[in-house]
Structure formats: C-alpha cells, structure tokens
Amino acid sequence: MAIFDESNVEASHHRLASSISAQVEALAASVDLIRKALLYQDIGRDEPKDHGDYLAVSQLGFRVVNDAGAASKLLDCGYFVQAAGLLRDLAEIGMLSLHFSNVPQDITLWRSLNGRKQADKFGPQALRKKPHLKDCSKLSYLDARFRLFSDYGAHPSTTSIVAHHDGVRFHIGPHFNEYLYVNTYRDLADLTWHVTDACGDAFHAIFRIAVADILPAETQRFSLAWKGIAPAKPEDMESRLGP
Image 1 (tube, one colour):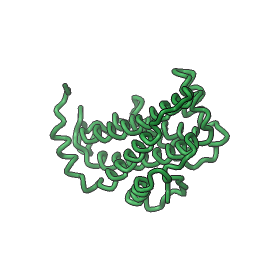
Image 2 (image 1 turned 45 degrees about the vertical axis):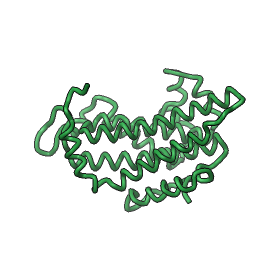
Image 3 (image 1 turned 180 degrees about the vertical axis):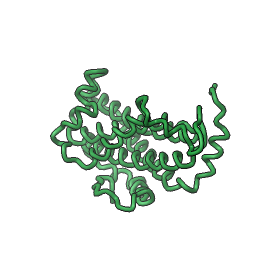
C-alpha cells in the first residue's frame, strides 16, 4: 500500500509523452535487446562454472532491465532523486561490463566475492585504475554519470534540493515537474543505451558471439533508437552492436 496517491502526478507527467517518445523507444529497444540476448544463452551447460558465469551475467542484465523500468516509474510518480539513484546503479553496471569485455575470465572471480571484497576489486574506484580502461572513452562517459548521480541521487547532499523545487516553491513528497521529468528521462534513456552497448561488448567477450549476429532485427532497432536521442554533437563512441 502506497503512502502517497501519485495518480495525479503520473497523469500530469504522462501528458508530456510527446516530449519523450524517442527516449521511451530507446529504453524499450535496450531492454528488449538485453532480455532476448540473455534468453538466447539460456541453454543447458555441462560445466557448473560455465552455468555459474551465465547466471552472473544474467544478474547484471536483469538489473539493467529492472533499473530502467523502476527509474521510469519513479519519474512518472515524481520521485526524481530516487530515480537518479538507479541511474547511478546503471552507470556502475556499465563500468563493470566494460571491464568484463576486456577481461571476461574475471566474471568467475567477481561472482565468487561479496561485500567489501567485491567492491575493493571491482567497484568504480578499482575499475578506474585498470590499465585497459585508462583511456577508454566509454568508461569516461559512464564514470562521469556515476559521479553525477552518486552526488545527486545516492547520497544525502545539498545538490538534491533542486529536485524539490519547481521554480516557484518547494515540495515535500512526489510532485509534477516538467523540467526535471523531461531532462531526467533523457538522461535515463541516454545512459541505458550506453550501458546496453557496454553489456553487448561483455556478451561478445564472454560468450564469443556478437549480439548483432544472433539478433539482427533487435540490434538494428537499438541502433536506430540512438539516432532518435543522440545529442547534436554525438560522442565518438564505436559500438560493437552497431551496423
């Protein structure tokens, strides 16, 4: 049972649908690609290690899908800071996926650790120091978003006060805010697309097959979705999922 009735906030935000139609498509294309890529690998495996690695990869994929879905719902309901916390999580998954795309055998070690040990070896701070990621433009993009949304959405900070003001007054609880809704939705779609791209790199390295080879239609949809949300001056980002 919800504490607040967010129905009016959701209805107000849904009236902005035309402003974020390209972003909704990018999210849908990303989620569809991840789901189908994981299902493609849902096969019987004789080696327990191989099955364990698949489950670990799946865990990351499930998390991307659920983060994207939960963040979009939180935005609809007017919980902007909480949505930003999930964007931080997405950025961290993308960073980890880039590492696995370079060192796929580390997926076995990663899943064997937990808590502090896992964070010390595979957390963002550790990943920034990896030689193979030092000059990686994809990591730079994801790391910048990780830092931004850590400050804004994951930790109590003065930065998050902007999420409670609509330009006229402060709000306690979920509320309608056109500017924050549209712009955070754009951040969510852009970030999810890049994280899916990083997951595609990891998928290729771990399973030794390109997503484009097994899901050509879904990959084309994913690539076309980027054209709908790309900034005026796109970053020079080479995607292994691209055509």
